[in-house]
Image (tube, rainbow, N blue to C red; front, side, top):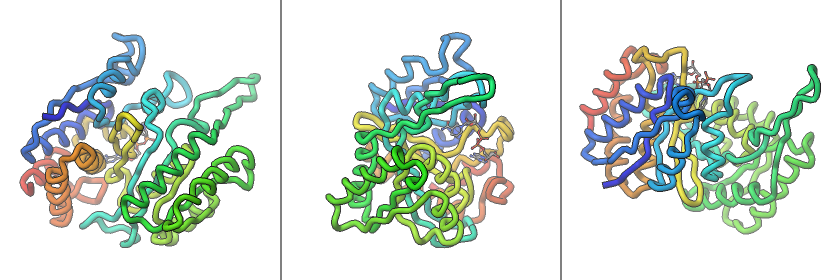
Length: 330
Ligand code: NAI
């Protein structure tokens, strides 16, 4: 039996986690979930939002499924998500974006993958209050992390039969930092003659993505652009409720949706569990349980094709009703 760390998260996290755990169990796969709490709820008892026990659990089990955790905006503790990715050196954030059967969007031909650098850039958290009216935030880009993520993107392309990798920067303005990311890409690209290469500025990318997303295949980006562009790409395939993700390191991997804790619909039995479920499907493939992954994915696709949907996709099913429809299709 597999033992997997489960972070239920907060906001809609517990509702969508319960849904996914129920679906995996109904598929017949037995998983021993090592449930770990994190975020604002544990601060009072344990003093920090990301206790060491959570990191130890993931290091031990090597794999985790994670629902979203709220980060206070503008003040309060540092993001648990950013800390987790940094502490475990989960350097690659992979966010595949592909149309889902039965989910009508503006485009029918979206099939791209966002590969986001996950450990540095403006997310390094180096901020300084210069005076009352001035704050600085330092953008950290290193050759080591940039070459590592670019190599990951090319290897991913080779392994997954992708044709092109496109690097996304703003190297015309941030000539040193984004310039180094671009230089690293060009250096690594030399080792992959079989893969086509493209270079684009992030503003132009955003415009082209909303005009014709079929122009893109694998995108590799520094942390901040990767975060923003992956939400844009989620919008191309039906929204945050369906956008999956994975954080991969050399020793362990944490699978989580692109979306956050959605406080606006918390506790209302409205959240779409699809994004976390698709993240879990990738997790099952990662641990070699391909037949269960396929079975669950097929049941999800069938359910959506039958027109059963949660509110975010224009349907009227609750989280629990949608979950039960998927289980009926297993
Ligand atoms: P959000 O992704 O939580 O929500 C944005 C919009 O999408 C909301 O209207 C929400 O209702 C909707 N939405 C998101 N997921 C949905 C789902 N599964 N089903 C149906 N509708 C869904 O983004 P927001 O509001 O900017 O962030 C809320 C909190 O989440 C913040 O504290 C943020 O820091 C945190 N966050 C955590 C992440 C993580 O744990 N990996 C990632 C992104 C944000």
